[in-house]
Image (cartoon, rainbow, N blue to C red):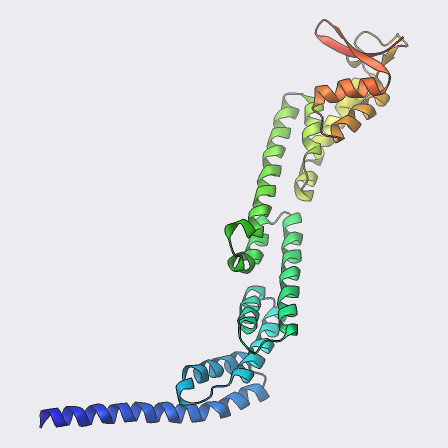
Length: 271
C-alpha cells in the first residue's frame, strides 16, 4: 500500500510539474509579443531565456531572442553602459541568428570603446580608461592582447621619467633635464611638467649668454655659444643622443670642436 501511494504521489507530482511548465510555456509567447510591442527589451530577453530553457517542450524563439538582444544592446550602448552592451552583442554574434551587420556593429563598438578609453587616458584618467577596456580585456584570447596593459606600461614609464626630471632639475643638471622632458610622450605628463621645462629652458638661455657657459671665451670670436649652440644641441637631443654626446655633436655640426679648460668645456670653431 505504501509503495502504491509513493508511486501514485510521484507520478502526480511529475505530472503537475509538467503541466505547470506546459502552462507557463504557453503563457510566454503572449508575454514575448507584449514585450516586443512595448519595446521592453530587458523583459523580452528574460522571456526568451525562459523559452530557451523550456525548449524540450517547444521550439523556443531564437529569432525573437536575436531581435531582443539586438535592440537591448543598442539601448544599453545609448544609455552609456558600454560593457553590458558589448556583452549582449557578443551573445548575439555567437548565436546562429546573427548576421554580418551584427558582427560589424560589434567591431564598430569595440573600436569606439578603445577611442573613448584613449580620450580618458590622454586626459590623465588611467583607471577610468582601464575600466572602459575591461570588457575588451575579458574577450582577449590571451593576456598579451590586453590593451589596458599597454596603457598602464606607458603611464608608468612617463611617471618614472617625470620623477627623474624633478630630480635632475633639483640637481641643476639642465641639459639632462631637457632630454628627460623630451622623452615624455604622454600629453598629461607633458602638460604637468611644463613648469619644469620652462625653468630648464630659461636657465639654459641664461647660461648661453653668461660668462660661465662661454667658458672664458666671451671675447673670442672663435667660441660658439648662445642660441646658435643651444639650437644645435637640442636638435641632437631630439634624435635620441645623450646630453654630453648631443653637446659634442651639436658643436661639430656648427664646425667646431669641444675643448676643455680645467673643469669647464666650450665649443671652439676650427681654424
